Length: 247
Image 1 (cartoon, rainbow, N blue to C red):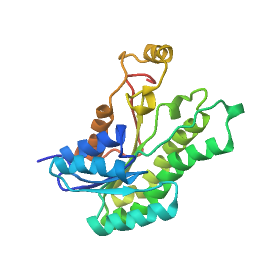
Image 2 (spheres, helix red, strand yellow):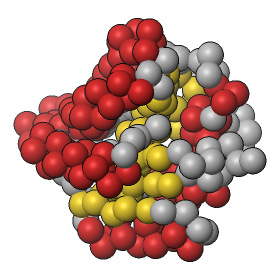
Image 3 (spheres, rainbow, N blue to C red):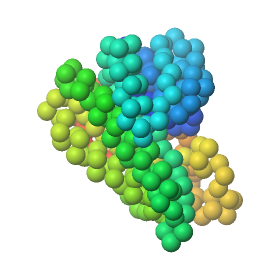
Image 4 (cartoon, rainbow, N blue to C red):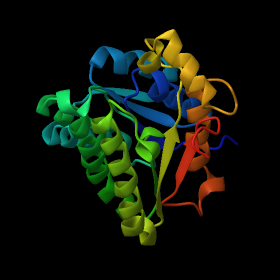
């Protein structure tokens, strides 16, 4: 039997990169997946890939920072699916700049998507999980939320905030059989890291004991573990998947 047989998963930021890898890995393990991204086209592309492996999928275009958009999508997903067993908050953006040059708009865009978005999505689905007295919430932070990074004060703050949010919600929901955990990826080969200059890539690699960037499937494997039965007694934890970068 597959690890996630007949479970319903919601994955935000599912249109590409890590979110896409998680959606497909969940489907391979037997889950049906509601794919959320900013655009319907991106959501539908991944939903089609999920259907291609024999699982059900739904595609939704949602601005996770907008409460009305989130609540409408959550209501539709719960009506269509009847339940949600797994929630993955993966949607995220960057707007890098040095502190003295960072605009209010750059700060707000990152905090609203990366942190407020996780708050809104988790709140929207938590009532159904509480009623079912079961559920797994997995939030995607970053090693930058653990160690900081010059030029990313907004991103680091959002990801550090997400870790604090996770620990608090884990305490609130534990009595209802719901676990809430964080995956903190290191440098993963995605669209967000593809444009790094070669000298910067070389400098980052020197900080990684395993000597290579991670792949989206490395994060997806960790998500399957946290969503699966082997992680039933794990909550409020941060799992760094980073090649040893921040050990």
